[in-house]
Image (cartoon, rainbow, N blue to C red; front, side, top):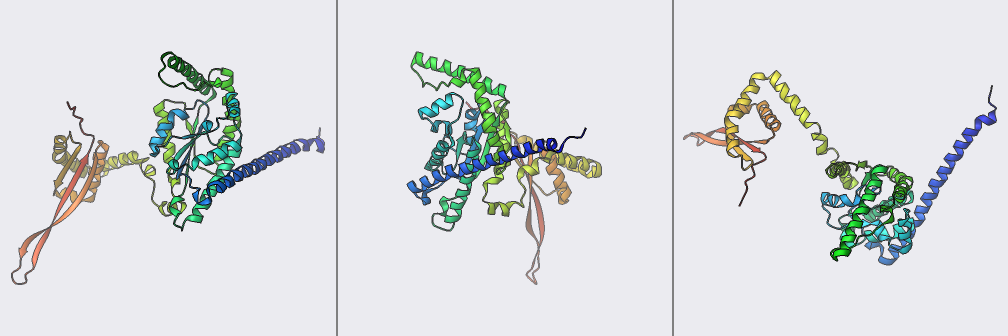
Length: 412
């Protein structure tokens, strides 16, 4: 039976209405963000002056689900980036009684309060070189405010670039570290933290030694811990996803051991590292490959070369191996404690560039780091008494440096 045209169009109308509602909601979020950000920005300009709006060189946004390990991994991230200042923890900025009631119920404080307090915190002098922002952004409005902040920082840099104040307005780098765990892991970790805090506080009260830690209802109640995670998934997750429209980053798997998570963090920092440069500087340097891109398949390529030497240049390859075994390895063995050996040789075998390539690859495959440096020395041979000319020959000396893990000697 043929469906009447009116019935056919109903799903299309519903889909169009939903899309229109989503677009209107997004537009409203952007307008709200502009109002909130502009209000906070103008307040800053009025109170401290535009020339004093000096933001950190590096801002690391640290986010993640409850129990994902933000606090656990903060010190590691600070060390990895060479930062010494403690992070700005958004939740501690919002310590009003009303804000505390909202947080204790598993909810979140409003964007207006977050943006105003965060901008002022970022301007503190101790954060000039870099800072971790723990717990920002958490909403789509905050994401839009972050975009506006980056735009305003860039405008300040452009404005003051060729002035005596230019050195204070550096290119700000945004790094994003988002730790992800599933709901079960999140809830288990929240409740485990609650048990540890209860035990810690009981010991402090008993002995009078140490400081009491904050006891949050969400750390003791399974339902509240679940609600806290779900609030994160419903509100913050989408916001963090939308960050990818403007910033390049990956979510970090935080479900494994501490060492595994740390390795995941390092890999993500390396991925984002090229974003630290001023765009003009980056454009100049981009023709030079990043080391990680070169070394990712370095061992596989080295193995291929060694196999090719053995097949295509078998006799010559054997000569190079014999040279290393007889002339270099005994010296390396004598310097096993120091982890460094240098061999000087005039052996003509090394005059062939292929032999040098083989030598370096052989040592690399065996776990050594080899460097070969050619020194040309002019040696006088004959002196012409009639013309006064000196005839010389060129002496070629190959200096081979071998570095490796030395032996540790126990002292005392």
